Length: 355
Image 1 (cartoon, helix red, strand yellow):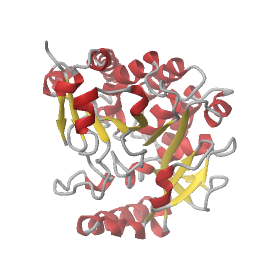
Image 2 (tube, helix red, strand yellow; image 1 turned 60 degrees about the vertical axis):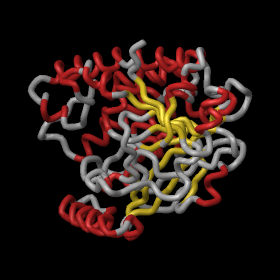
Image 3 (cartoon, helix red, strand yellow; image 1 turned 180 degrees about the vertical axis):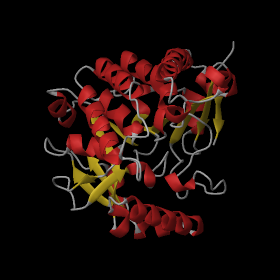
Image 4 (cartoon, one colour; image 1 turned 45 degrees about the horizontal axis):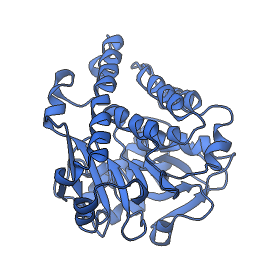
């Protein structure tokens, strides 16, 4: 049987999955990476989770966590009608069209409309009071020149941050502070060791936090002075937590489910070109990473993942870009079906490999 998905498990859960398979009640965290339109390969997987109600099936609360597009996916899944909200997000995101005349302000307004398109009236209250899901939306608060709206000043700060990060990721703290916006009846356990500020989501700040987590530095104007949070300019959480860079501290013997668009896990945005940069600490101990293998990538248009550069490549033919992204979303349904089959048949026991 042809398989398109790859499965890798951390050392604390590998034997458990090989013995028992993937039990829904063992999943306590679901996290999604940043990465622009690459998230379209996740559409089928996310829909499979929503339709099967796999998350929270065992009666336990589940933390949905992520930055940028990963956070948007989580927010959509926590809406009143998650499948509808998710599709509204997919349509809104894919139909964005930008030109050289656009500015950080106009792009920011477009993303604000995207948030409004999938977080509808009544959804904010539902997310905050969700019966099953807790949320963790990652952002960063820009410090000093990194918070400037002037491209020259901000660009210089980003260059300095990149150079310092190449030496040590600790240098990022000079320019950015992690700020996570969270919900749930209790504070998430990972906050005990979280290196940053934590702010409870509210009716006054949820949409602004959602906008901030997608506000890529230099490209989108940041969100200033979010209610309940330290004063400052907030930007894309992927700057410091790009794909997976946190130990979400699920209870021992449980799982952080991580659907990724590739095998390599890049900790921070500035680490993309640093092939030697690896995750540190125990971030992967309880992670089940699932990602599309080479055979699936081959069937995508041009045999590649969608990319933010597609906005430039298809600048004169946005309808073709949209067609391709729609096709990728449709093809991703294969992945969701395959995942559920592997779980329900227990075939995942033979498919899972060590991290």
